[in-house]
Amino acid sequence: MEEEKKVVLQDSEMQYRINDLKEENRELNRVITDISKLVSYTRVDSMINYLISKLKGYFIPKYISFFVQPPREGALRQYNFLNLESTSAVLSTEIYDIFKAYFDELKIASNNGFALPYENIKDELSTSLPPEVEQMGVRYVIPLYGIGGIFSIILISNKTNGESYTYSEQSYIHRIFSVLAVTMQNGLHYEVSITEPKTGLYTYDYFKTRVEENLAICRRYKRTSAMLIVDIDHFKIFNDTYGHLVGDKVLVELANVLKNTVRENDCVARFGGEEFSILLSECTPESVFEISERIRKAVEKIELYEEGEKLSITISVGSCLITDIKGLTPTYIFKKADDALYYSKQHGRNRSTVHRIGLLEAAELLAKAETGE
Image (cartoon, rainbow, N blue to C red; front, side):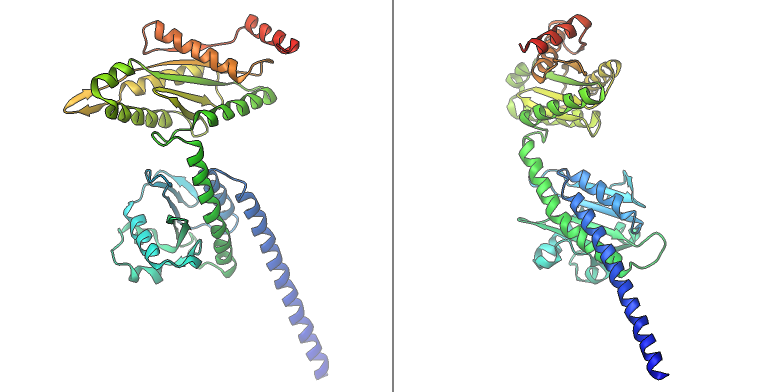
């Protein structure tokens, strides 16, 4: 009888162990699937948004904040989430500076992407943190290391339901954020390769690639997009009058206005000099003009001061619609947008002109495409 009980207990323990192994295997497969998708992203914001979407299937922290420092020492980026929903709240950059100094001094490579308990860190900090950290209820601090040291700090608060993080949840955090440390650094360096240093806008070569991709999408899905060319009016005179250093300030300010006026999925590039271009990912013939005018009016409001003198600029805008017309090419789109810009320049400047391909023009493009011209 005792032997039978012992066999039953052994069988029961074996079954529990088998079930545990099955669960571990399911979790591991899930992590592998998530990581495989994560490494396919090249943009930092896409990586973060994907990661947030996957966390929803595991747990929901009250707050999660990403501080990211680009390689060119540009403005510190923040991505903040409340209950895993994006929020416009901005935290003190001092938080990043304090944690960065702490982890840079430690120089422990194994901390890379590892969720470290905040309670174990705060007493070792040489500087007091802003009260926001305590108010958030931070549970974990995750440092991301690159070749030059810390480039990102991530804060994860307690869960919304008040429960502790399980072993499985902690394991997922460690695995996914360790991979994020590599993919995010690769993404940041990729951004450097496709953006120009002065304004941080995309390069001409990258922009051409995006136009080609967009044209293919318009043909496949029968969509409409547009390309805009923006040129600063009388910029040579401006530079001759105030100097190139002031002119550079104008270029940077204009770049910021362009980025902040269009949508996140739109592509803003600098062609060189005072000429910029924008690819609107999706629009209508009417909205192209509305967006052009919104940009033009936003630029009119730019105010810069040089030795007490208020400076301002205006721009001229030319655009061309991108549709599914057969025979339409990136070169043709560039030319027609440039022609529209020239029209704006010739008719008073500080205005917008839209080139809309008509039936006759479309027929000519089709004929050339069919004859291979």
